[in-house]
Figure 1 (cartoon, rainbow, N blue to C red):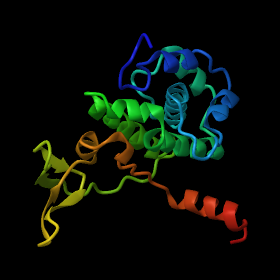
Figure 2: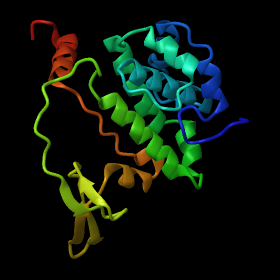
Figure 3: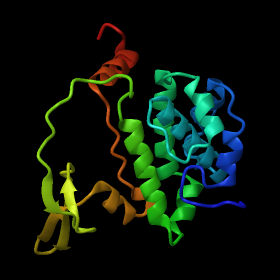
Amino acid sequence: MGVWGTGSFENDDALDFAGEIRSLDDLANEVRLHDVGAALDVDKACRVIVVGECVAAMRGHRHQDMPDDLAQTVHAFGPPPDELFDNARDSVSMVISDSELSDLWAESDDRAGFNLAMTDLIDRLNQPLATAKKPAKKAPKPNLSPCWICGKGMGQEFTSIDVSLDPETGMSQGGSVHLACLNAALHPKYLIQDWQFDDEMIARMTGDIFGKDT
């Protein structure tokens, strides 16, 4: 590759695919189920990440580095269909847990950058449709505990970890940690994928599996 970076659009495979997208089918075809047990190759993984970015943009949460032409194209598609949204999230998970791209970044000095990019993509895919605004809720009090890794205040995050210091005695040490900081320190395949599902989506998925009258 002539271009190689941790960002979603910082490699030639992604940029080439971005220039080929003309329809929703171009996105859907990239995130259909593939052979079980077959790891995604680098080219496929990069294309899947682009689809994830397109879906996030269609939901109103575009990456700042998305090419302008692609941004205009996907904006015209409107909100993503449920099937495309679900398949995109599943495929992004596959990139993280079972792909040659993840393996390559695991051997790189900048694997933390790849982990942070994937954490950011998951976060934006988790956000609700930008046009579907819910009544504002009173913001919770910030967590003033320092992050175990970066030392900064936790803010609105309340993630905590417990590390075993001596398995024989059961001694452990716990503390607060930003999810992004924790992910940056992990092997890419063990990145914590904090996918969120709203009640409406859970009801729809249950109906698809067990029947609409469930």
